[in-house]
Length: 195
Image (tube, rainbow, N blue to C red):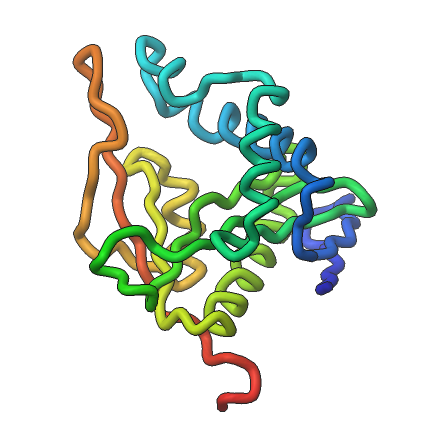
């Protein structure tokens, strides 16, 4: 378990604890996931296709998927950021899909912080701990995909040492709209004790 006290913003006094998630966190993670998706991506996605990307807008339908994910810690690992006992963010790391990765590359599949806790350091701490965990798991690099139009997230990941590598993919193409993602990569920090 890791802890940080944030006092960056005037009036912001938040103590964040990072820990491994367990099945009991599924509903809280689904809540953060839903709120984060809606707040981060709704302004970026055209109305005529938003339902294809952002639905369901309710928490309950996401809970079973998170339970399944958390029941399989060998497939992926999820860390949660807690303000007191409340889960306010999460980051899920897994092996990057595809033969190309050959198990040496991890993927940050999701990193979300509840909008009520944005810009207080929880996302940065989650990312740092996930990168350290990736190195400890033997991954030499980590990649992630982000919407080309999400400038805020792209700047955040750039500040964390990720760089776009030129790979793109279409997340969704419907009704005359196309959502393009960019791949970002970086090396993992050395595992503790290997320096």
